[in-house]
Image (cartoon, rainbow, N blue to C red):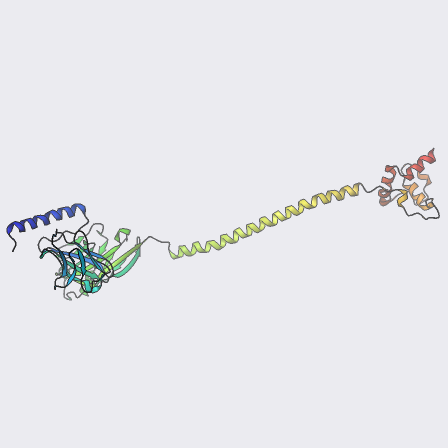
Length: 360
């Protein structure tokens, strides 16, 4: 039996702990009335049950029915049945349960020096998962056996997230949690039908988490009791994505065509540059044909003198000779003859030498 001094000390310690918890904002403040701490964990996740006490002799964690979960005996950890390799007692005497199973739910006691110093109720959830993008509207589904004859004034439903009220509707008032004002709703028609589904608009990244569903005056758990919401960044609409994808082939074709045109233009330019010197050389060769001489003309071996007809043509085509020497019909020279003999005349060949000798 505890004496009044110990009771006052215990109550004062709890008040001090609550003040500290509110300041830090990391731990849960136990209920001073019944001292029960509520902890919630998703299936297969880890959870830590707090025990706020100092123990000199030994610490024991057990389920209310008496089954030992874990204890420290002579500095050694002893694990209870069904909890092997899944539990450990931390330095602050809290109990960590790894990979929670559904049957881990229940009430736990922290016993120090044969005295119960903490009561923790653990709830294991099998949450339904929902996903949404930022800015979307989303509905988290939950159902329960509500009063089919309930009127508008007899509606009791509550949604929580991280231990904080998100939306609470009772006969006298509707309460919204921070950041959820005018964004959340539960329909009264749905409540009468047992539909406690929770809808909120304009999803934000901060809305991500696990939501719990309660109904009726006694805060019964809805089914599924927990719904986990995953929020993703806003993505492009499918039509916009298709439009962006359709642009890629078009741009690729345009780039390919431009590349082909550039290559063809470069090839044509190079071909033209290669042709230009050849054409110039051809023009030069035409303007300056190789010089011919009498020796280059075929001459019979028996006669070393030029044929009379050749002499007449040469004389006719010579600008320096008298045109009267040309017979009728040979007073004009063809262009081919001029081109053939003009260089010969200019180059000082035998024909020109013959003219010089004749004049002398």
